[in-house]
Image 1: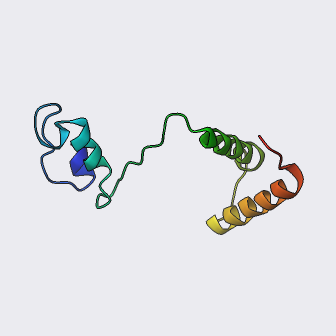
Image 2 (image 1 turned 180 degrees about the vertical axis):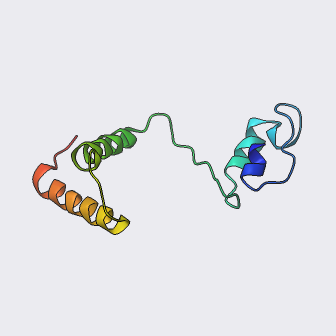
Image 3 (image 1 turned 90 degrees about the horizontal axis):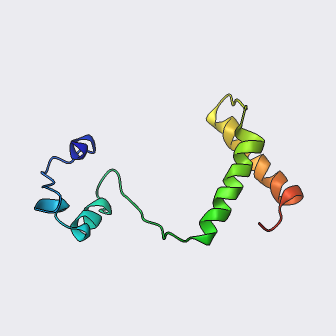
Length: 95
């Protein structure tokens, strides 16, 4: 079912028994295949840098994006870039 949604016509098999779904190794190779329209990328479970990125994106969402409206994609881009410049000059500090 899901394979057809992604444009994959081949039978994926049965989990734990046959085909691509037979083992974790074959499933992982299939999901990470760069020729597919959707490609999975796994990150380590304990990524300290990821927490800091999430904190910054939360600040961006709360201070700029929440309750805002933008007339175009260009307007959104310009306002995000302006916010980044303002943040770096005035608000930036280590997390």
